[in-house]
Image (cartoon, rainbow, N blue to C red):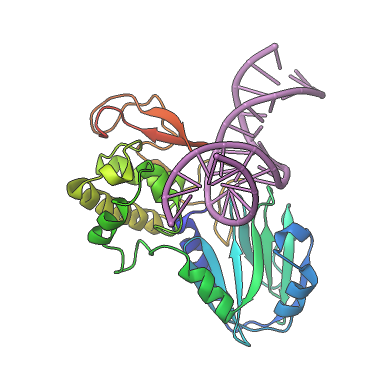
Length: 276
DNA sequence: GGTCCGACCTGGCAGC
DNA sequence: TGCTGCCAGGTCGGAC
């Protein structure tokens, strides 16, 4: 599922292709791919030039001419695919198509149709941005800041880390992996994560995200619902996962069988032997 | 204000 | 082989 490393991989690919291109035609095939009025959205992107492609948390942010911002979120199964002029036909589950003046296309594909996009004013995007938490791969993300924030919450640390208003961009896979690396139990209350564990967790979050970005993210399986980047390539980080999707396998650190529990209606994988 | 939980959505897969 | 029902999970909104 697209989390920070997967979205970053897609953004890096789109950044090579999109800046400077003008949208000649926009077609929304499934209305719920757009938040709000489809007609207004199509009017806003048609004729606009993409000036920059950025990532914020799990959002893909395309800066448009006219100080507008095209924001998309892939949710579970969304994908952006760039198709060069004369390239492949539209993939299955295409939800929106954007034709550029030079014949290239940008296609939004989403089998489970939870992904969505919208065009915002620069001011509206700034407000949305301000509500998101710190970027974990930025200098602003420090162990001290993390410790201070932990102190105010009795939530389980795993659920706390998934809250995008705290640390932006983390999702289920990388939270689970970071907790394993830091030897912190996912059930421990945030306010009971002391300085030693907080520093380990801070380092583990940076390490696991950096490693996953280097491997172009994680693809869990095959099929249309699994992550691929903007050119259709899968991520290669799956083999480096230590606990996620490894229920019953021995922990690489202590040999205890990896356990799966449910927290906040989501699967959590952890080692009951060495995560405390 | 913080926390919890259902809804959204549909492909994949296990079980029968 | 075909059908049924559960599972996956990021975000939002409502309830407590």
